[in-house]
Length: 329
Image (cartoon, rainbow, N blue to C red; front, side, top):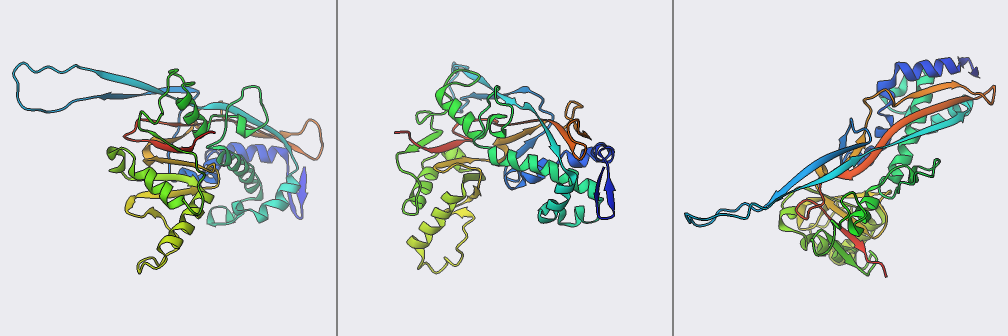
């Protein structure tokens, strides 16, 4: 039993709260990841592996010819949407959490302002899971032998891209390359001196079908800083340049900048929102969130969570996807 002032709550109360508010609490990790998820497509109901198929071929009208016949070459390429099953088992001190949540945004806002303290504690715990998932979304690399780190829990976007470049993917062939038109590389790091040129050159060298769409340009927060610095340095005297904060690419308003703290440096990703996927399950009973009385400490409780998560692209064809990376020396 934990007591804070006149508030008393037990492991049973925490466990009951998780069960009662499961539907609300299960989305807390997604809310903690919203900075990124608002620019992506979220798919739920993905439990382990599911394959989506992309059809491609050349169908073209030409001048009439009675005996004309095409090659009929149509390809069906599958991409595997994969979530990984992970868990978290942690002893927690309810008193310590109670004291710390008041400095967290989880207690602010109308949604949680007047709810019971026990629910606030549960929400805080779930938010922590989401924050670790957010920071690992691009760089995580699955390692089945590591049971402690979110970075080893699933495959992030950059890991998937690296596998598609190296051909160490499900189809065992390279799907991303400069020859295929969906990869651009340079030996230079992005800096305040070259950020504007690198980003503009990357965009304008991409396939015309990609450039015709409404796109997200994912980059590190530092790359975005370098771009705004370079833009002010190069165009500070322009009469319309009154806003230091640049949300779209100059000359291409269909490209929205998405600077994120979880994107590695010297990396740019250009794709529509519909093509970059964050994968959850959230629909089956094997995803559980419970709190039980600790077996090791009379003052603590054990938090137990089971959850599916993964990332993927629906397609990496040059018409819908392109990436810029610094080349390895």
